[in-house]
Length: 380
Image 1: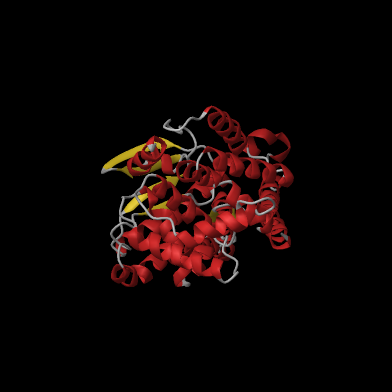
Image 2 (image 1 turned 60 degrees about the vertical axis):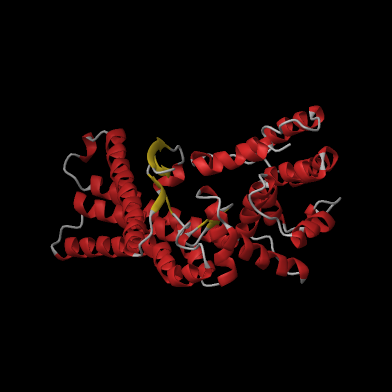
């Protein structure tokens, strides 16, 4: 937490420095007294937003170039407020309303053929690491280019110019993207953190398993290896609830609910005896507990199908209680609790359990994921 606050202070200081430089640039102009402050502020804000957009473009260009170089195919791309994805061989486009997109965006590659076997995993691992770092590398290059432009302006005694201001904005924007590579927010990790994870074989397999659910029904290698890694930790009392493991298990139980995957009995017994019991969720560290609760939908659906209405309702009540104790304010999760509670109250054996499984703006865009969700909902 202290490191995050320190990072925010640095970022605000850099942005404040840009603002002060813009103000001083205006103050030395001949017509400073008659300038319209609002219009001048809008002009420099537009320059900064354009620099942010260019830095985000650099970031995603780095990912795309290294992906193509490594022989990967892009599956999903968010850039500024546009998103593109490949849905069953069809290229689709849409809009994404997320202010965070202005600082880098998002790129996902197809892992179906690249990591479907142990041999393919070993062959493509290094290429995947280069893809992960591609955006970081291009932002570092962009930051250096901005510094060079400022140095050239200084050498020609042209520091107080719009070119120098634009270069300064580009430096700060690229720094924001570089800083984002070292941060973690919920299930979203920065590129450098993902790269660090990829150096650990178990963590990399688990991460890829979580990403693979949108692509095909054949997840035997990744799902098996990811569960082996988590099961080993559970058996030996080691911390297991990192963001990748939670995401992977959530996807695995969805596929298992649809009878398209096998949920590891060791993990299932661990959840039954250690987590889905009174105060069991509280055994997880607060941040990990929050991540687990945000993925609870698939588990509730799986337990309804395999354990019945009463057990699913027990887990729902435990999750609601944990959310209340944490004072977790997530409108979508609160809405899910309400809908799931109503569904389970009226549920009778043989009915479809519509609405009990996870649905997100990202994964919901893919045919495979929608088909699996519908299939899991329709299991009797």
